[in-house]
Every structure is written in structure tokens, then in C-alpha cells.
Image (cartoon, rainbow, N blue to C red; front, top):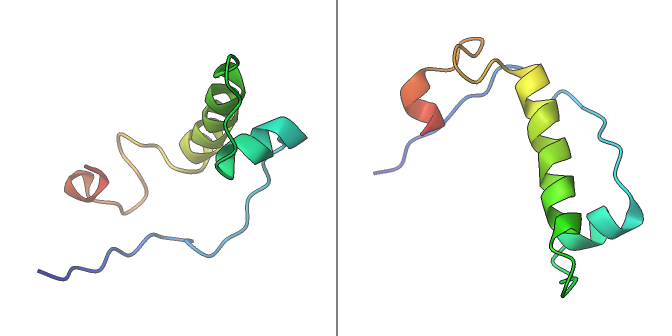
Length: 67
């Protein structure tokens, strides 16, 4: 089954401020002994997403598409 998901303002740009280490962690580089770098970067991304879209009641995003 091939379904398309339309995200309102999906092409709009957002800005996320990351350290170089956080960017490297998101690119796949592993920081053995310091998993907090990747965790910190993902937290920042999630915060921007939550600011942009109310995850519980997103603008025009049916809850079933968020699962």
C-alpha cells in the first residue's frame, strides 16, 4: 500500500542551532563514551518540531498519520 502524507508548510525552512559534535552525531559519527551528544542534538530537533507543530493537535495533520 502506497500512501502519501501531506505536511502543511512542509517545505518551510526552520533553523536549529547545533554544535559541530551534535551535527556529526546526527550524520552518523559515534562518540563512544559520550552518547549525550546525539541525545542533545535529537532533543533540539524535537523541540523545533514541537514548536512548529502541536504534536497532539497538529495543524491539519490527522493523528493517525503521526503514528
